[in-house]
Image 1 (cartoon, rainbow, N blue to C red):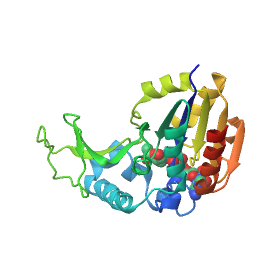
Image 2: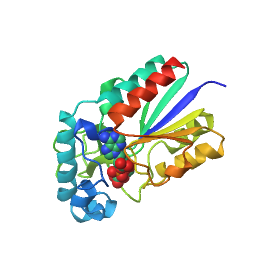
Image 3: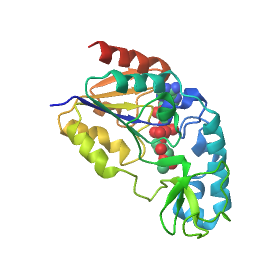
Length: 231
Ligand code: OAD
């Protein structure tokens, strides 16, 4: 069997790059209502508000640089004898900026725009607004290419397929509050795959992991990667 590591990442891996998490004290969901800025209904009610929220996040992400945890995961992909897949819930591009190539953005990407009418995508401008027309069909139905609550995450078939082949499942910097991502550890376990959590604190489903490393991602992730590459 080919070695394959599937790594689920969440907002915690980008925290030390200056991007806010969602549920930590003072996090994004303490400042904004999910119903207003992260649901299709919220976008229908007030597209200007929703674009404003993601414009601010896009600007912040554009200025952010990868930290030691992103860099270590890119090094793992380059040096590991087998496949490494990053399944990220993050909408920033810091994994790619660090050099990771096999990255699946299950919750979408800030730097992508989507037409709700024709479903085509194009690179998002730094500032999006409700009056923007789709460059393909010209409908004024452009939206951030972000998966909102109530929508189906991207790449679920590929993720299911990867979990079935995975020989090590790791979760980094996620609180385990949002499904289906929060259920991947249980799926991996059911398939007999070893599981490890690297996070600042134990997550919701923390007891499902075989092993746990607690601490800042910029410290625990590089140390873990060194161990894997020297094994
Ligand atoms: P959360 O904000 O829910 O969780 C972040 C996790 O990172 C927490 O468990 C923190 O303890 C941990 N953490 C914080 N700083 C860290 C650091 N420096 N090193 C390591 N860990 C750290 O974010 P997510 O779990 O990513 O979805 O949230 C999942 C989804 O909920 C997001 O993708 C987003 C949100 O609603 C949508 O918007 C659809």
